[in-house]
Length: 247
Image (cartoon, rainbow, N blue to C red):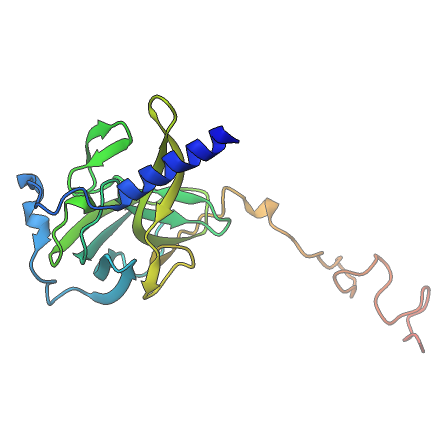
């Protein structure tokens, strides 16, 4: 019991520490991503939106290509997201992009793109080139991605958001004990904690061929039998008779 209480206290302390900004001082920005930091959202962004993530980050625009038509497995979806930093975030938060199939299978593309490229590792996971914790409130961050469409699902939905892992001190290396996401307070949600920004038809039926599809019974040559009824007994006729069943 004491063990459990001690572990809970340690976890709570670590979660609070992760949720609190480490510093209000601006962090040094990698020159490789300076071009993706803007003072204002461009006027020609095709999809203006407003999704509030926990009052800390706003998704204010996005562009998706192709915007329509079939996107077969192996093809590329290009995504450009415009994030506005509102309040300083603590360390550990990262952007995520999910393609989700109708069965709930999630394909993650969390480390794809210039802002998200992994540049180092820490004792609590990967560190992106420009993580949300390094963002300056008021600025716009252009998050570009090229995503390869996976196989095996006919329809995919595209959602984005921010999340972080929670760790507890287990007397040695930190142990991952959960995951938290910034909630969508307003705007188009995927019903969980992400912003829904796209839906794609792939034409892929999960590898099933026509022979695996459900087939309706075919009419027998020379018969007026309706599908779904026993052979040799058309509906509405008595056995051995070609007259309508009086019943």
